[in-house]
Amino acid sequence: MKKFFIALFCILFAMPFCFVGCSCNKDSNTIRLCEVTHSIFYAPLYIAINKGYFEDYDIKIELTNGGGADKCMSALTSNSADIALMGPEATIYVAKQGKKDMPVVFGQLTKRDGSFIIGREATDNFSWSMLDNKEILGGRRGGVPAMTLEYAIESNNVQNCTINYDVAFDNLTSAFIGGTGDFVTAFEPAASAIAETGRGYILASVGAETGEIPYTAFTANTSYINKNTDTIKNFLRAIMKGYNYLMSAQIDDIVDALSPSFTGTSKESIKNSIQKYIAIDSWNSTPVMTEVAYNNLIKVMKNAGSITETVPFASVVNNSYALAVLSESV
Image (cartoon, rainbow, N blue to C red; front, side, top):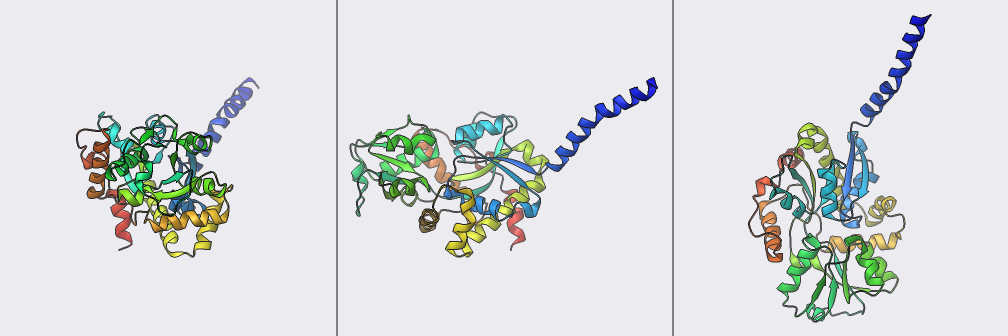
């Protein structure tokens, strides 16, 4: 009898570990994805989620909002996220530190700044000189939104414009609504939400002014990529399906595909946001980042004083998986 109870105890003690093991196997294709902000600017990602394209490849996405590229990079380096959708500038900063398990970009999503300048007064004839001697909320110093804004301001010879870097990225629009600054930069659907309430007016696209740069991309630690090569490829396949749907479907169908990710946003606002981003050619047609585009980002970063030396393309970007997936559709 004593031996029986000992054996029974051993079985009961082992059972939780069996269940844990089963749970781990079940969630082996779960990707913890940290996005820099939640915006219709990243439409191909949300379409891929909502249309079940990730599920087609047995991938489950756990999406969190990092609220800035610096926080997304922290999530990667602390292993609390598997993949981050953020500006490549964060990876460039880390590359300069010579980190052992280097985060690398494996796929590009957007190819220009997705923010819009919001002002307190409406105008049909926006001129960059309207920012002369004014204050604009521009986000964190050293982040791509702030650096591209700086580049646009300097390129248009704006005089004595103060860029406010002190307001956290996620609080820019609320600070503007609260009375801080004369202008603010905002992504969609936040930009349209301000306009719909009459608290501001969309005046110009920063991305249309600054041209093509690799604005947001998917990044993961080298160790994760090496251990999950099939998952990385399938992730990119799902993103490409999301992009293709975005480019081929009717606008109302696109809105329906995005609505589950923006439950507090009207369908009309989603439609307007998509049309704005299509108009400025926001998305990369493939997940491959070109070295020309990368060098444009380096130029913007040098102009901002964030870096002084060029960081080699090969130390930041690994196109091999994107190229492999792309070759399947040729």
